[in-house]
Image 1 (tube, one colour):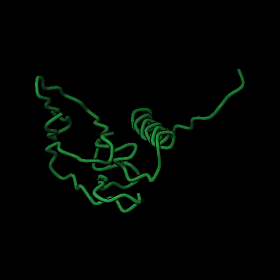
Image 2 (tube, one colour; image 1 turned 180 degrees about the horizontal axis):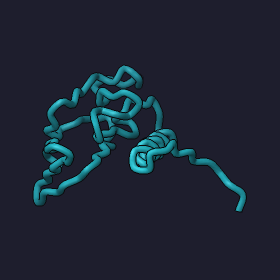
Image 3 (cartoon, one colour; image 1 turned 90 degrees about the horizontal axis):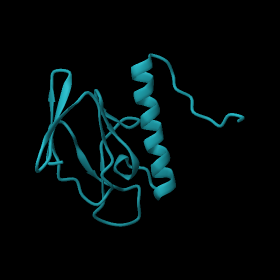
Image 4 (tube, helix red, strand yellow; image 1 turned 135 degrees about the vertical axis):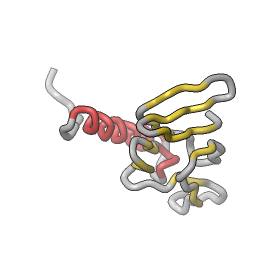
Length: 111
């Protein structure tokens, strides 16, 4: 992805070869760099991890702006794969809540 533009109620997502329309975009790009042109998005130095030159995307509870989310290490979670994957599941629950109009609770159930 090279560019993300907000157009009224949708996003236009541009790649090197194609363009897509989306109602919701989730960024899960990692913490090494962020090179996508996206207006209103703020890239910050990641002080949550003990290594220099790492980034995170400014967010509030994984929300960057309306229908634009960040998950995983790009959200600032100071962890490795397992927690980063859980962070993505949290974003999925947030999107489900938006679509269904009710809080999504994910837990183990008896089979």
